[in-house]
Image (cartoon, rainbow, N blue to C red):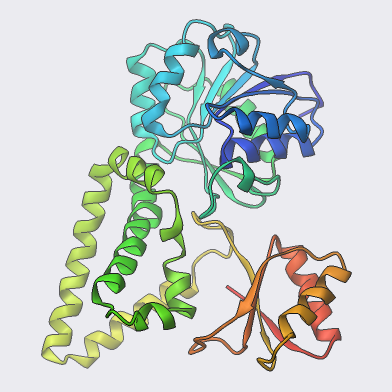
Length: 367
């Protein structure tokens, strides 16, 4: 797409909306970006950083000149936003959303008789953190971005949205709203439920000395990382896609019953096959970003002694390598290292590995 003077409206300046604004600013596409958010501090922060160019105070009036509007609010809040926008947008303004479920949104658009061209969308990227402060320009890089057209979707509008998300660094992937909701129930929504279930299970089984929580690390923390996501957001997502989630949970329950029966009967062959199948499927998954935001971690084999974290953090900082987190791994049943470092992106991780190797440390990428 050639540089243009398109006016982009963003309704909701949280993690996704803020990242869209940052990504569009970075590509220098000639866009003028205006945004609305119920939390004015997000708007003020975005204006101060030149992430957006204008605040939309009144959705009905201030988005009337937009060429494209991104609906970056939870599915349960979308109707209220559309009520404000419905009769105020110019004729060819393209509406697109970033909701985690698509069938409900598609139905809502039809029920409200929205005349503007609409393209359902869902970037498969995120974070356990939320809000504008967690947004970043590279959130969508090499991440799948689902587009969910149906028979009524305007093809020109679809192409417009596709080109914009390519500019943001994402990989467009088309599917029907129904397929999207079935797939995300299995690979995103139910895993979020399972992560919360596992954490709540440990909390229920743990004793007053909290030994389980004390040594819970490594694989358990990786497996349950997404349980740190927003409870309000995920309760809304689950209710929006409840039928697909219930169907998926029924399949999960069937598999769980089979494993329990094999354990009870001591059928080692079936148990081995259960783990073997999981390993084979897992090892053949795509190496691209999944529905969860990819993390960029390394583990370092160092002596756990006073000052070691400061030494390594300082060495990385001296080379302008940003890190998100650093700390000692206290439970290392699966890790060949005592220190874990998390970076912002793959480039930073590789620079970190090179730096540590130069310093004589044994380090390797993780995840």
